[in-house]
Amino acid sequence: MLPITGLERDERGLWHLFAGEALPSGNVTLEVEPAFRALMCELHTLAHVVNALVYTQFGGALLTGAQLNADATFRVDFDLPGADNDTLRALEAPLNEVIRRDLPVSSIFMPHDEAQAVPGLFRSKAVAPPAGEDGLVRIVEILDLDRQACGGTHLASTGRARPARIVKIDNKGRQNRRIKVAV
Ligand SMILES: [Zn+2]
Image 1 (cartoon, rainbow, N blue to C red):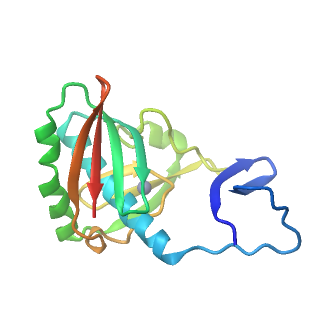
Image 2: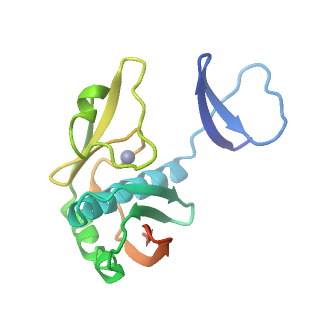
Image 3: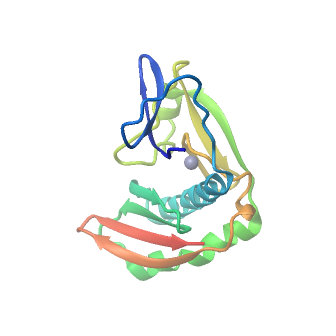
């Protein structure tokens, strides 16, 4: 079995990429590793929560990078010049409050141009989820907390995540703050 290292889309379809030189022939079976998938759902959903808290508390600050890790940690980078690191560290309490409240997570599809007209739906400074072939973009909502365009995998509600800890705040240059979180 070969681990998939990435996805690519072109006019011929969606490509699953793996490292190395093996040449597949005949039928290829793809398997999702349930435990890893569940962990990514958990970390990614919590990344939404941190994103929502930063966005509302720091005047619409945008995401500049994110990484989910197999060791049950993740980091999110924000364009936050001059932000006080203690204030960022203090987001741990509202983050766990959102987990405790067990807010439902749902998604809808809406026309891409309509979504672009709604302030705050696109949160990343560099990349935006593209419209599908049908011209629609997926909007993920955490009830009472957050709505944003996203094509990722999420928990059904925030209470399915384990309690989380903000383990580190790093300054990445003058503009960026990196928040590292562990569950
Ligand atoms: Zn997402």
